[in-house]
Length: 74
Image 1: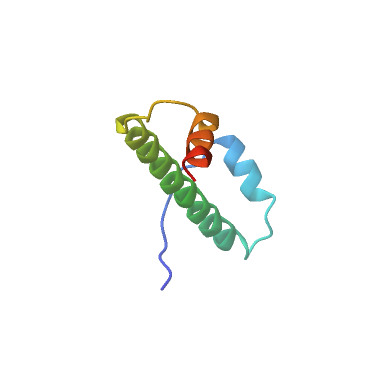
Image 2: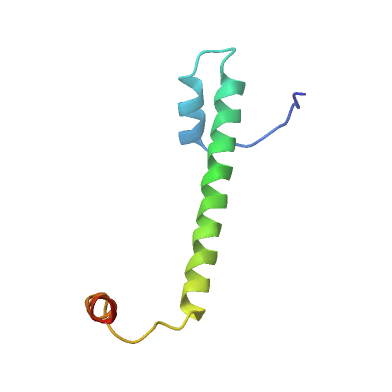
C-alpha cells in the first residue's frame, strides 16, 4: 500500500530529487528512506555491541600465551 506524504527538502536535496526522472522519484525516495533506516538500525546495533563489549571482563594473557598453554597441555 502506498502513502502520500508531504515533506520539506532543503535546496541541495531538492536539486538531487529534480535530477530523478518524473515518475521514478517516489521509488527513489522510498529506497533512500529504507536504506537510511537500515543504516540507522545497524549503527544502533553496533553501539549496543560496543556497550556490551565494555562490560565483558577480558581474560589475562595474550592470544600467543593461550595457544602455547593449550599446546603444552596436549
